[in-house]
Length: 416
Image (cartoon, rainbow, N blue to C red; front, side, top):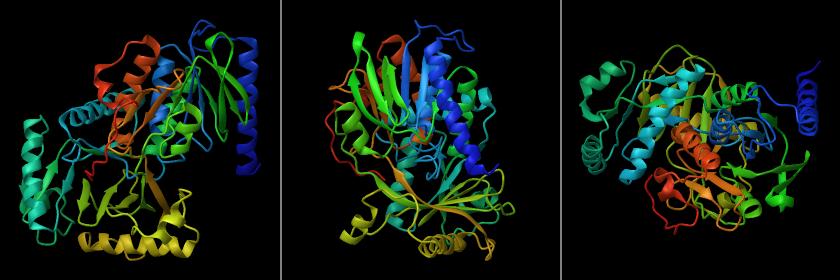
């Protein structure tokens, strides 16, 4: 049987299983009953998958819905850097990301996830920007982060195959890591399915209406789903929060090119944040490259990107962007093979609320909905999963999440 037919049969089976168990009321592996709250999570990226996993662990009946595949949206096109670096401002947001790192370590041990911990190295070409970076690192230290500025010899020890292009000092953040966000999402969902989660992939939620008894009815391509509550972990899809939660979250979502290569011999130990390009190497040898600057802010580019495409319109154009990034990377990694084979060239979209901070909480216009949208989704996913599931199950607000409620006043703040 072809892979396409297998995928179709799997989706048909998932949907049949969902409706069969919903009608029969059969308890799942956690002995869930009709008394357990039924919560839908819309969006199976790294954030939605983490929330769904934690909800199932807390005893909820959970249906996870995605219009594509698990980890196939924003999580697929992310650089996937786990960090609490200088850009995470102000202090409450920095502390939140520190908690995210600790939660990743817990989750890694719990599910045997593949997370590469090696720290990060970062520097700038501009002397003025380097001086500011040094001040930022001092602030990091005051906030409990073991970051420091290191000299070239120490940086070269950490990355012996790198060319630092005349830099004399480099910022080193030893707690940083990186992950394959798609694979991590899939692992979370698989673990949740073993506990009773129902997955409906390639299924769109089109509308929500009120049901009897204070319930919500999700009208989907897969039929109607009746739930007590639903979570919108829909990433950069700004229209989803407007249509399904009745609130327009102001975003400045931005695109960036992400290149994933075929495996190559080991070149890097850290997340390598050089001028013009981010690079890290996964445990399987694949290099992940992300551009630091987005596309030119022109009308032509805005028109081409208005539909939020995740792939380039042609292989030729994708290759040109990949070649540009690889050429920049080769300045800093002279041993980068000239005949390197590419696995994917993606347009990644950062779901970035206007002020740069997460949006976490109940919609002020639709009390059955809970919004979970953010940049730093990779860094924050495990801790967000823990805290959001706690709020949804207990009804007790988390003080950690108070700065990020959807009814706050959004102001445009450029931090990165």
